[in-house]
Length: 140
Ligand SMILES: [Zn+2]
Image (cartoon, rainbow, N blue to C red):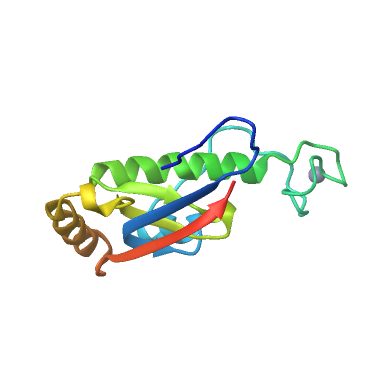
């Protein structure tokens, strides 16, 4: 949930508050949801290098789009899986936070407690864990 005032500033503070389950990264959420497979798109070369800071492979010159494509693919898969359970995916990895699955309770006053009860029940069934509140704020 982002509120911007004006249009001159190029950075803003966003905050999130999720009631659900948290993971350190997308791959952990993938394992918890037993998602398998891989992207069908071409994924770049097989050399190992830092694909976040390099635009191209230093060895063969292929574009370094493996990580991004894989993450996009995985995010889509996780979204679908969460949808099936009536949950939402919140990927805050790029801001130094983790991945959360559950209910957006930013501005909790407007949310029904019933939603949280339902979410907790689903989290218990799917992940065999209790839901918790995860919150933070970041600049983007
Ligand atoms: Zn290469």
